[in-house]
Image (cartoon, rainbow, N blue to C red; front, side, top):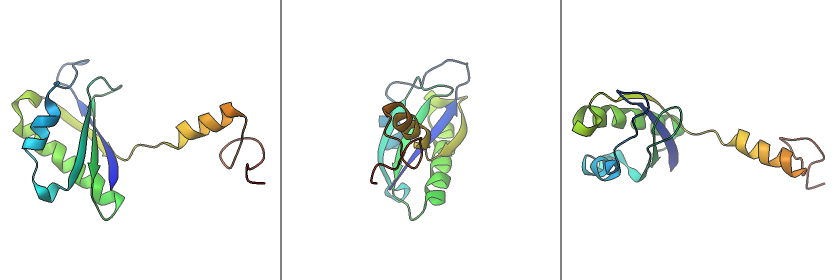
Length: 118
């Protein structure tokens, strides 16, 4: 299973995603989409974001399917009229954890100081 963040550009800058959007996305989904969970982040910056947990054999397949789903959703849901898919990618968490390591003083492979297991 992969978490893919799909960002959508609103037709009017600053417009959040509709509140009941997750239910509409589920209604337009079929088992072949292999969606496990949908999270809507209506005020994410720089673009509102859908968090899609997808079953897939590889990351590229999950990202491609998420992009296809977004294309289908923005053309098939009237509340998304004018919205445009920006991208669909696995979120990068490494910078977040590197920041945590460096601020904790623990160091590690991705931060200053000795490796904690030594």
